[in-house]
Amino acid sequence: MSESKLTPLERYITKRGGDINTAFLDLGENIPGFTMIRVASWMVILGFAAYLLIPSPPTPIQLTYEVDLENAPKGSLIITMIAEGDLPRKMNLEFPPGVFGDTMNGVNPHSATANELNPDGSQGNPLAVQRSIDGWEVATKGAKRAGFIYQVDLNHVQGLDGDVRRHISTPVAGGLRIAGFEAFLQPVGLEVDDITVTLHNPEDLQVLVPWPALVQGSHRALPAPAREPVQQANISQGQGYVPADDVASTENRDPGQPPLTRPVPSNLLFHPQNLEDLNNALLICGDLQVISGQVRETVIQLATDQQWKFPLGGALDMVRRIARTEMAFFGTAPTSQITVILAANTITGKDRFDTYGVHTGSSVLVMMNPETTWEELEDQSASVIAHEMFHGWLGEAIPQRDPEMLWFTEGATTWYAARMLTASGVWTPDYSRAVLQERLERDYKLSPLKSQLSVAEAAAEVMASPGQVRFAYAAGVNACINFDQWLAEQTGKTRPLDLVLRHLYENRDGTTLTRLTFQAAVLEATGIDCSVWLDDYVYKKSTLPAAIRLI
Picture (cartoon, rainbow, N blue to C red):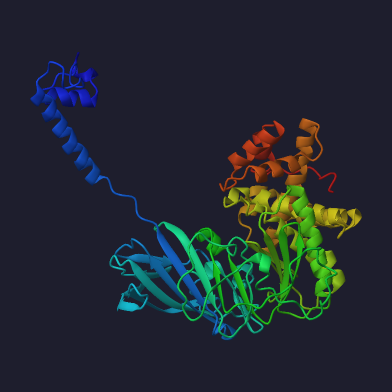
């Protein structure tokens, strides 16, 4: 047998003086014992050396954040982050992409210090902290526990910037509203297997906690008491709900719903599922009115720090009707709690929008004119509420991070929001058709961008000029209606895009939606290969036909 035909192990045995035909026989066979012993010894040595050379996987660390609300009425938070486990010699702490370090028009984190922590939790030796472009670098020097303290101030200049993301974290009446991605520094390049967030609330501020995935318990034991015993939050107990003064009856609640309110404990304990879940959190404290209802097993909250020209009880009923309809469409809710927050729109000026909506985690933040009437709430703001709520399914449960698919995420959500409002009875069919027709005529058919940008290109830059934003949304709606129409012609089915959406939701596995996964879902749900249609009408600058059967 030529050496070139031998396996690496056979070549090794031959070179060490062994017989490849007998090397693996039992020692009782008629072969020199010292040859097998020598080969076996070398194999053990090589195996041990290889074991030493293979780097062991890093041990996941645990993170604990304490958010101190003592100075929240002044627009400031003090946050302590404790990292435990196999820490590196240097730990880079950064904010996820957001509004960082803009002292004139955004969130200003500062005054960072760090210490090694002793086994009893007391501060040990100080650790060197150096500011980096995106956060801080901490010389942890392989410590097993390290504490990092920093302050976050909301020095937001109201109304000066049209990027709605700059208006998520801001002072509110009696407190503040802050997004997780602007509050929580995170270690870069380290695996994290458990996260705890505690809220310290010594002033007994009203606190809204729209984190359903975080408040339902934990596999970890509660930490030892610090200032006072920590209470495990539980949705079924209604902790954190503060009822509005003008809603004293139970007319807007389903039978069997828990009480509207319980005292907000001074310490609440949360457990995000992962760092992304932590980023998606939205914390609000201050002079809040919060009322709640229920749809099936899902708590529906409506919260505000403003006085409006409509009753909150009626607004909650409208929100519940929308939530019930969207849940019925998909079969289940994406979370066990949906919170809608009504806030004042501070983004004013020419070419601005009257109402802005943001979906973050299980929360829908709607910023609208403080003078909004009940009629305007139903006719205008309801579409924003339905749109952002629908993102709980398409955008969150069915994740979309690829800009190439923004046309579908936003276009389908806008179209289905109108359909959900119609099905829930908030809008009449005629009104829904009129709204859609006006948007398609004004923002797509008459838009000069129609011949300059493809539907996908326009949507991928959704934070561009107001004109491009309007065109991108209208083009996405038109593409979805035409795509549904084309699929119906190919399959003979009514509303086949409904089947695709339900298929994506029922088979979700946490992976982001891409063009390829979308095409695969369409094929599985309808049996149709849609790649050519998408290429022609979405990813090229082809003009879409006039949309038919809008609702």
